[in-house]
Image (cartoon, rainbow over all chains, first blue to last red; front, side, top):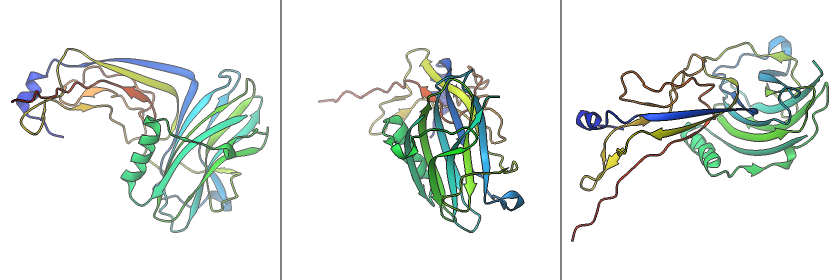
Length: 90
Length: 184
């Protein structure tokens, strides 16, 4: 995109007013690319790329939006799973 | 109990994947995916979805789901494996990426332009761009972005807003454009 300096000067007083809202019943999880994934540690065949523990007592009945974005440069086909694990009471 | 919706795309070119996800998000057209529904057993794993990623390919996917539950802890995450049916990790990959990954409470931004100025106005056959608008700027060191909504030409980035994560928030902001009047 381009803009002339004159145009910028005419619009120099236009700013955004922003309102930010938080909702702790909804969560965003981002799983971004490991550019060069190493061998899975300790000879295992599966490993967590990322995880977060959600305390359901503190955040009951939550909703999630998960963005998965992975490049595979490992040289062979890999699989990315979205997984939930019950951790019980903590 | 999990109720799941998804949109996925893969390939070797990044832009089409991103556009596909953006369209699905904007138009709320994620597919309902009952195969991801189910009960998360205590001490065990529930697979919500699996993406195959051929070598030299990229996978991009959006998942939306809710969990019904008011006690206990649930661990959510992504697992990288060499087998389509192996999703029970015993290890955590060491940190290896400078790109953002993480989790945040949901965040929404509503931006209101102060004043009545247009971002474009008619000028012959091509609109004249009066100024540029950037929605956000991410931080590739993996830290939270400190800039969320700001004017690109704003020397002090007025209106910096503490950001809980640039990926995934719903940002709403109006842009005013004028339509030229036709002359006789």
